[in-house]
Length: 492
Image (cartoon, rainbow, N blue to C red; front, side, top):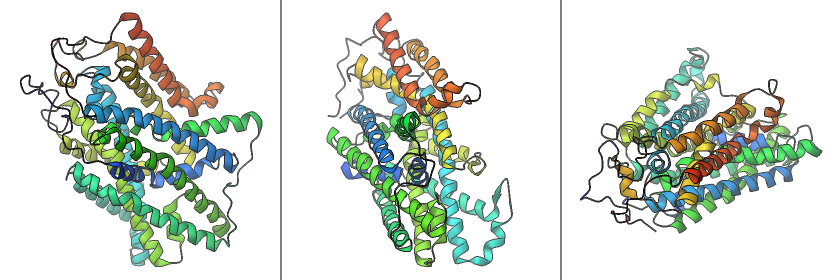
């Protein structure tokens, strides 16, 4: 198990108990599987999966694209997961290997900003379900849902702030409480989804097609959309492709990481996608239009008990993905900025407060909008993933001096130049610039970018990896290896 040499104490600017290598390894196969269920089983995941079926491809093409995409995601998660399990360190500390002990704050803060944005979005989505539940139970409160401020009704604000506080209370109890919560929160949504699917199929008298109505594509357009669906599937998981090590660091062995990922990603994601499409396609037969929002669908149900349980379960599931994807990461990322003053819990508090300033209901809309947002953020996450994975596996062959991740002296392996690795920056900046241009510049300005936009994550990851490998190969090793210090024991 990873340890810190007590005879050579770590630098307080780089170390606290939360950032230290994990000692308790309690996240087994089921906990990691449940973590992925919490991540996948959300309103955002439902809309994304159903939205892919509206790209114009036939059902089998979308399903094949989902299988290929999630297989690539599973491979990437294993790579970053094994690194976290072996070293026992969270994402911002692992990033020190490539970017330097202080330079790691750059990739950490990029990830933190994205997580804060998504925290606010997911909290709002959960609050929508709660508002529907309240109005179903107490119709007299409807006036509170018609008037408000800053674009959100009074009742919406009450629900939003209540869920915000509830999540913060859960998070501040620590990672073990998080593990116990997601052990049942993730599976809970399956009960509602299967209930919805059965109810919709019955209401539609069995007339449900896996192909949502859209303009059918053929030839080059179909091929392009097929690969776009693969790329967007990877982009959907692009944030956790960086910080999955925040969870795998608590795994007892590689087997737990491998099988937790297998059951939680390829198996669970495909099954959830198919059920999402069955429900969405059934909504066309029952309500005359495709309803991509499961919360709206639950609210339309005639059965009050089903509607109430559905709203509660979607709210709980959304809390689950928020804790997994949007609380844990920025808590570590912000603690990494000033470990002496910010611990894991304070980092989470800062995350929650910052998220209050985001008003997601003003920017969150259709599945198309979600896809554009994913493409934009993936432009910055792709190069980071490419550099970190290339450095860990190709440059260092998995050899990391864990002790040196917490030291800021010139003899430490990851100090580089004043704590920053200029080679990583030299690879990241141009790769991110190109990927961002592809993702964000409108096709009306550069027509080619319209076709390449869905592939921004792959473009950024490939450019970052290739640039970093080229730079480090030309000028030698990425950092000095401390010959006098014995290798730090690591978990296997």
